[in-house]
Length: 304
Image (cartoon, rainbow, N blue to C red; front, side):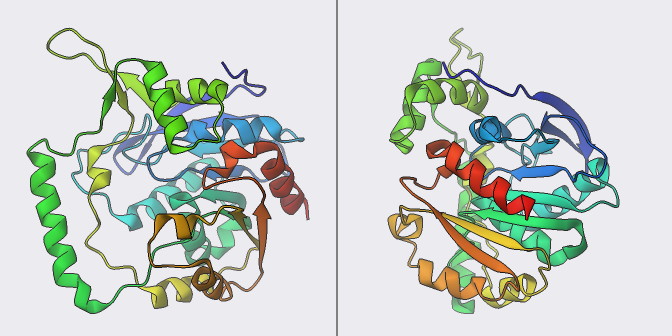
């Protein structure tokens, strides 16, 4: 199994009525802002371990499990609303870095949260790094009735127990699932991630299958339409120097969303101080595929 270089510690704090799990590396240092790492959809804070191990400098690093992921509770919700991630982050920063600007890194969904937060609270962010956080395809108002109906149909399916996440007989099964999703992920890292990405559950028949640590309600498609004009208006208020990092594999093309890198780059032009970097031989989980290269890229940018 992968041998970690920098051990982390876990802390649980109350955030907006939810018991939030926050993973930390290092200790606070006077004059040094915390480095905050935000994970993506159906992922966990521990996902950043490989990149943290590859950093050259010791820093105080904070990485929360988003609500309904990892060891953070869901608050009993049967739907998750994107603005809540922004508010959760705001409360987390008030707890760990009151009155202090932080360096913020987000991957995928976490990258999109980071971009929006940096425009809403520009004074809270010193440097911003977006790892494949592309946002969503543009929508039209005419899509609203269908999206509301799809959301309500999904709620019925959820409450009828039809949206449960797949279970696995053992940790090796979870690791195989991770490697199937990301063929670049080696066995030792998959084995290590599996124990943080899942937990055993006790069934009525006495079996203990391993369950992915993600609330099934995350599978529901949100009824809120993504408005590009609103996102751009927020991007325009970002004051922090921003690094947008992409993998050499074109994730947007692979996902088939009808949304292209060219369109994302057009939106990115709204960010006053944005640059783009590409990590070679990497897919969407670039912090797993090339953690050393990514660590150098991020560290150099934060040192500027």
